[in-house]
Length: 425
Image (cartoon, rainbow, N blue to C red; front, top):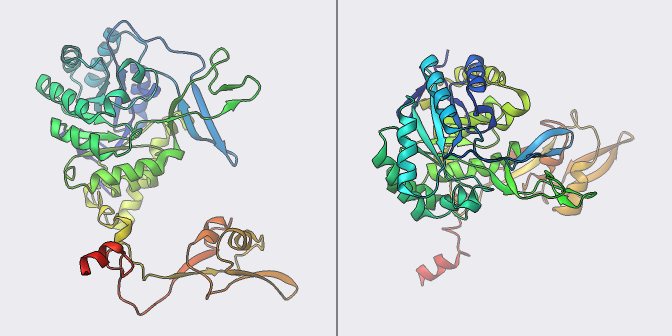
């Protein structure tokens, strides 16, 4: 059996599946239930200074798509609204009862060195394994000069990380905001400040919809709404790209990464790990399905690793990073042509419509033996693979590589590249 045990920034856990800092980790009761279900770790919901935060009702929004509930999830909830002393007492009790699980505490306080020193000392006394600096929250707290207001300014990130590293012996993880042009800027700043790891992504600034009766953004609070933080399966592609971007960056290459964003299955987790993540954090899927989803995640990842011949997480962590290249490094002489499996085809015509109306008119609609039949016109097919995505039948349309007899050619080498022409001149 594959060994799922991980050591992340010096923090050990029996598996890479951690709960993210969010409502599921707001109190001892929830975290204990999660650990009983099998989660390898948890990041306690963000603590701040007293007096406690005041939250709203309602506070969640969701996007459903084609019958799938909570394809995207949004919240306008703030950090914990429970007293700091209560949280600290519960963290201490949980860590004492579950010494083999990773217990990290998320923190957010005003951008003042003394505020960070005070709360770090209090958290250290609980025996927690580490802290996660919340530089990502895009609503409510950012308007108060915290959360993404810090995470969007690399100099602030570096400054606060330095304060924290000087004030605690615990590993310091920096949670990055995706609400920024270049994720590498704050990641590099965290590295310069001495961060032990980064976690990403935090939520994406968003409005999930508009109530057309009340004429207010959702979720609606007494007839009004505001922007929130978007998460769930819909943000996974954004998260994968940002995680991979940090993993392949020469300045951040050795910086441990905890991947967050739309993780709901073992396969999602494996993809994040393949792109460099050492652990993964889950929130929306647990809120949607409950804590027991981790059983399928653990079993699924272990079974896949067994089949693939990977003994430990480290055996495949980051293996896809080498193949995550810039566009100009792709082989422009590589060719594929669509192939339709006529035995699987249900004659719906969606491939033909998509190609005829919006692509390259490379799928012909014909009649064969009195039935409609769709056939690829190989000479017109550019291998864009729109038809394969439009087809509702799994594996009905495949993209078949076509030998060209031409050597590998990238845009950097292409004669039409102006930079290449200038260099030659």
